[in-house]
Image (tube, rainbow, N blue to C red; front, side, top):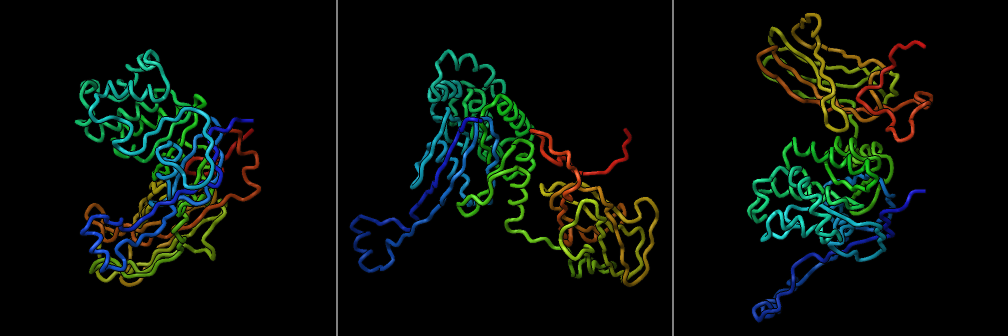
Length: 399
């Protein structure tokens, strides 16, 4: 049985919002003539939050803006206290939350590294043994003896992450602050967090980048309006997050385009908004050609839950296709045994080959693919995400 790293029982956090009472003479006199001058109300940023995180878990905390993610991390990092509930934390915590927290602006990068090590309970000798590795990872060697108040936000995040990840805390908490760094450094940080998780330490990761959450985490906790609405498998958590304010749409009707070609209708031919992965998925696109055009392109992008374009297809890509004046219906088919489980989104493009777009990303059709109960019965293997990857083909095989 694994040890518990973090345990929350019915945790809540209340803030009082509204106008503060002005105790000055002017404020007092003004208040005599204003009924609502000191009106305020309670706002519960977290409500009845309970969960356990075992040592070695890598947990994605996800939710829309205002869901309570940052408040939760501040409570876990002991920056603020909960209004109600009980918290149990077993292990040293290092956290990277907002740009500007954790470092003293007047101290140099070098001095802040040793300061953070001391806060974590490490000796100067222990910090010194990690110092060169921290500075090399951050990539700011030339500025390590400069006060951090002169750092750019990117430099600050580089050093702050390097400190948090290399000083060997038992629990590492990372907020969306990594978005400040460039793409190369973000990739570097994700790699380091995987290394940290591989060493058996606990990681809590907040991000709106679902691809990064899926890559890094084995569990997901979804927050909405301050409450936990899901706690479990990472991919299921991502699906729950994506479905919070989203309804699947299997048809679209409109009139988009230019003086030559109009997009009239698109639809997915199914009575429900879900398919089993062994079913064919038929997509229809209706266009109205008002004037003769040459080299007309009709196609669509297919996006997954992480808003990644996973496929693009065009009618006539492999053989020339001609269209007549008036209404034309183009039919596409995604064969069964192509897609894995999850939500998918179809966005239609019309254009003239090598010249211009007529419409782009129109329609926004959506559907869900699920796996039949009798498919993949030998999966999942322990510690392997089930049905990972973009596709779920039934390729020919021989034994």
